[in-house]
Length: 147
Image: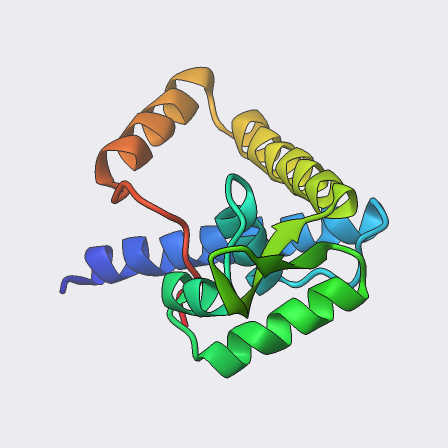
């Protein structure tokens, strides 16, 4: 890896950290100070479907115990609900509550505010080039934590 490649790689990591930090700050400002970055990945997984703790663990590539802890934390704070799984009496389905969905909207607004700062710092041409380049190199698929 050349020095230039390393500089590019670390710049991408810093931009990613900046986005995560700005979303977290925006959520706190909007009344969600107890939401951490990993919770956003849970919300993203549950945005379209109910899920079990085991399914969340698989999707997030964490242990079932870690998924269960995340679920307890988010249920206690009103972001998730648990319901019996009609297909498996041993399992519980987890869904987003109204508060959880509102939090997702606040996260999106916070992300948009961060991106607007980037847009303001770059020329229109450079911002469009950045957006196009990211669309080309970003691997399609689900969002997942990178730990």
